[in-house]
Length: 510
Image 1 (tube, rainbow, N blue to C red):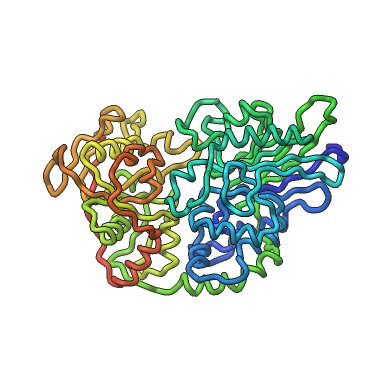
Image 2 (spheres, rainbow, N blue to C red):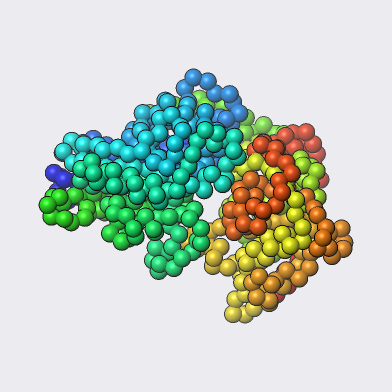
């Protein structure tokens, strides 16, 4: 590629608090983390280092850091500064700790925050036009999934508006062209509603709008995130797209060559995935080291004891036969709320619990930043929710249950299969999807259609996310505002010797 009209981008997204190279489940070093990626970023003339959001939440370290009452230097910002970031956008999970935390982060961040569909946060800009050392004018904007308005409690968005991501991107694109950009880059904390290989629609909401942005707008480069896919790079409707994996397992390096404007040709882009590797960038690590040592001591404190170890099985086995890990989560939620019923989900990967439980065990198994709500439900709502769960399964050619491809592609979504406590349900997988729930027992009796029950669930699910829109019409009876992981830590610490619920709440016929 010609040096005179080319530049390089190093792009991360969805770091989720994995600034260091530690595997928090084991406490050992691991080939991942921002401090390993940072030493491999392209630097010098005609380079940009960019992040796509979901930076501040998602690791045991960020859980500790929020609880530690940090003062003065905001470590996530300092780590990003040491890594050399120049531009970022906001991810939906960056809102989880409130606007004050975002503004503290942005105040200490050297990088400029571009988020054209967010208004009301100090330090957020709509667009940027950067003249590179070679004279190339690079136009940049950023947008985040506007579903953040559905997922966050109102107090986390007070004074802030989040508008439609596509509409904001379209307006920003026109502004960049009018400003004379030679090449345009959109940083989108969102993914694709269509399969990028086949074009088949895979999501029926506008949570992800990457396909539409490429089809209807003219950006040269669309840097995406949110879905935790790994898209090394390809062209979609003339726009180069890519998406790095989460937790800083690596990053994407893009080489962009921009033809003369008179030619009318689009920019030529080549991108590739760069693994984080084994070597730490000492500048980033030195910022984190002391806090990581404190976090390790906090995480390893023993706080309680289970009567049996809670060991994970493969996702299909747990969904078919139940999971004591899920039972335990529901047990905590039921005591915290006094609700009749509870529902929870498991992360795509869980490590389980030994009998002696530390804080590390809790935060490593329940990784979601959700609060706990109680809603009023009846049989029709529960039946619809259970039918959605039953869609997780399909039968193979031999008639054996397997996981539906819709929960595996384009990314695994085991977290959208739910586990209930308080009702015994029966699925018959020989029946068509939507008609598989053949029994719902409550206290040994078939649940009457007119009976009202209280259900506790996480804030993400209560928003209708994951294919459960039925919950959005249910009356909300209480909203604790407390994160579920915090409730779990308190539960383990206060009970110390815990007898886990071993009830088998689901029967699956096939």
